[in-house]
Image (cartoon, rainbow, N blue to C red; front, side, top):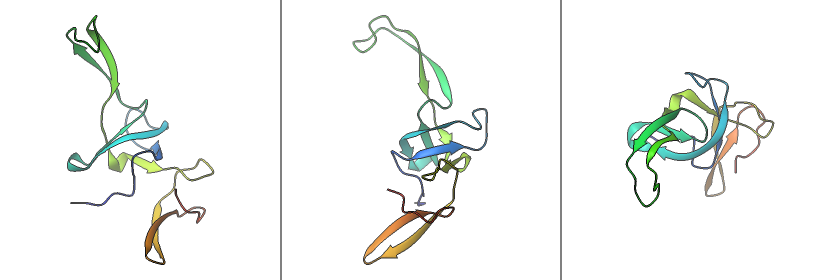
Length: 104
């Protein structure tokens, strides 16, 4: 299984596709499909029948997956950056290549 530099809760920049230039928070990482679900990006219309969650049913807008290669992590300054890894003691940490700061 591949390892990804992007995790749930990270803020990412979309660098390709219809939503190019948008930023958002990662809601979910779909490891088996190499995709991420980003808040407010790649919105699709889903038709639903009435159910307890949506008593009226109808058409709901929700986020769909976007390929992980089309997003880039944002650094503390709000700019897209590549991710590096380094060891501090026994812990492996991620850091932004642009600023050198640790990514929390």
